[in-house]
Image 1 (cartoon, rainbow, N blue to C red):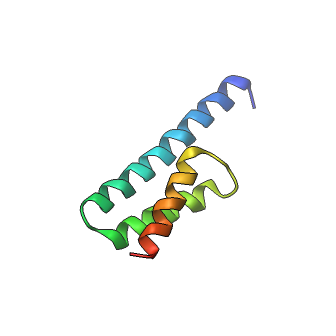
Image 2: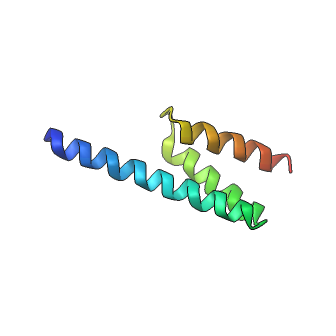
Image 3: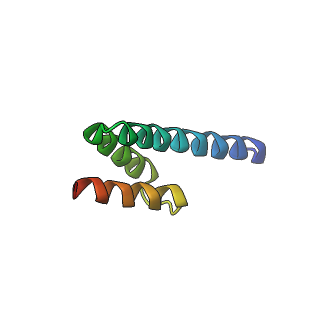
Length: 68
């Protein structure tokens, strides 16, 4: 894959993950914990083994909601 395309794919992936996380956060703020939990889990599933700040935050939020 050409380097430029790799860069584009990386940016698209980051935007997708950020969008999913933002949606989870919005749902949580609206008091829709079950839906937020599903979205945070989706972020975790998408990220699998990647270590980004968003992954860490999603995991923290998911753990917090599980104990809610």
